[in-house]
Image (cartoon, rainbow, N blue to C red):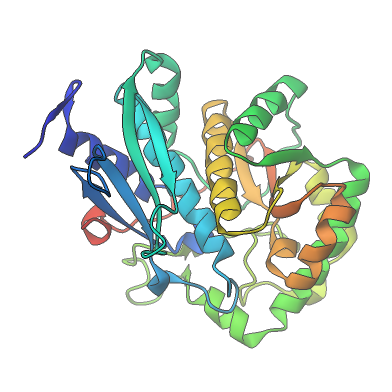
Length: 337
């Protein structure tokens, strides 16, 4: 039976948290999660909470063999659940990886104490459904130092670090991006796996509620959309083109001190906290991430970008030149148990 929690019942609160969590970004929109509402908490004596599980059946075994990108996706889902809970008037407490006997349970997000930060947090909650991955070309626009500092605080609060890449770092990144994309494009297994998550215009494709619509893909001859799909012509790639594309917007790296599962969850949480603030401010985000997806180039990233720790993702932040469609989402009923 639902109990009263402020102006909403516990059931309504947890459903709102799950609805926000399902709108989180995920690697190639695989939506690799399941949710469970716990009225009495995950353990005896705990309060109510939303349990977030990884769904290994929605994995990318070629691109993401160790589940790093899947964990980052689930960390972003937890961040959205936190925002939805705060929008209902409660701070949150998060238990990360709480049960060694259930490794697929990555987080329990619980309402904690009442607060009065509604104006700010409501704008973040409203940004949850409007946030987009903007794989298309950006305008020539850079974020101001004050805006970057606000984003850096959001990332730091989530247990990660944000580094703004200078001209030298962008030049090194361009070389590594091309190297990684050529390697990915030369792997038929990886291209086939990624293509299986690109939704074209064939029979049944437009009805799918996951994956990346073909209308959302980047259109330039350089790896600005982070997808090694069949339409990408690796022979046309050049570090000079990539470096120029990166110079049109602010490029940042998100890193963590460690490189274990909890670090990956932190990186996903940091990414989404940053992304929602960007959305509220009218900026967009795109991934420039192939170099983090290939073991060889990922090892080279910290030195190349002058970053301490382990680079979890690289993203471009800027102003949109064109609008992009929202990626589809599976109904909550398929994810909630």
